[in-house]
Amino acid sequence: MQEGIQLPTIVVVGDQSSGKSSVLESLAGISLPRGQGVCTRVPLIMRLQNHPNPNPEIFLEFNGKTVPTDEENISDAISLATEEIAGKGKGISNKPLTLVVKKNGVPDLTMVDLPGITRVPVHGQPDDIYEQISKIIMEFITPEESIILNVLSASVDFSTCESIRMSQKVDKTGQRTLAVVTKADKSPEGLLEKVTADDVSIGLGYVCVRNRIGDESYEEARVEEARLFDTHRHLSKINKSIVGIPVLAERLVKIQATIIVKCLPGIVTKINEKLTANVEELNPKGNGLENILEESPSVAGRRHKLKNNIELLRESKDVVANIMDMISDNFDY
Image (tube, rainbow, N blue to C red; front, side, top):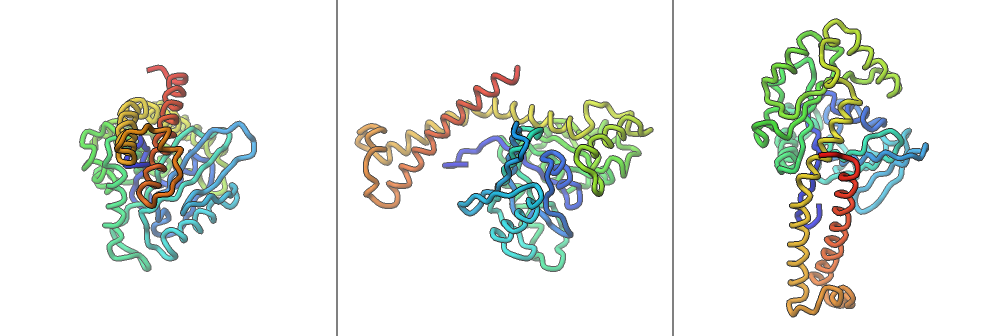
């Protein structure tokens, strides 16, 4: 986000051990850091791009630098970057880390993975870990442009989930909340009734999934997932339109496109307003934008920053126009 302009975002939240990492791994086809306690210690911005090249391109962006990595080493690379941002140990930070995955077959999605919610600090975590995590989550899910992907374990009562309580604070009707129910194979009984009853008002609906197990490849996991929902005596009764990682990916892509279409006109207006304000502040005498940008940056601080803001805002207008063209070509609303 530049110059205070809020962009549409899919924000991933869930209680600790809800299976959040497994869902993201399945969508991206890569391994994320695992372990006891809070594994995601900084906001992880995941930019997935479907890429025809058979060789994936994966890199991290943080602290003003770009660090290339690969599928085998991505988990360690994220851990090292997290340590650089949030320090060693188990503390958290609100400073984001960006992961870009260009890979054949992944959905074109941008998501923000946030630390899992925990109420009781474990050894090495600050005493106010719950308050710190809550503050970060609320910061990301409060904007109206945010779509909340709430990850829930099939084994729990949804109404007791802290992530549900938080999302309901900012989205009472659930109109921008989608729930993904993990571990369907571990707690199959009663799952159909839970997602049908919708006691917690999930406006965008539910998608039930099976987590990858052990050394399964992602392809093997999808085969086993499809078999589970086809043959299990309880799970086979759930409508096929709300089960499986492929369905989740498709739903997220469509939801993201919809919110972008809805929000982009307002974003364009905000960009134009801020562009005008920056130009007027930089050049109160009205000498013209092109003349301003051609001047030598001989004046300090504020003038240089304003020039950079103007360039970024102009680039943003071009990006927004390209996105709108792409969406209009691929989706019918």
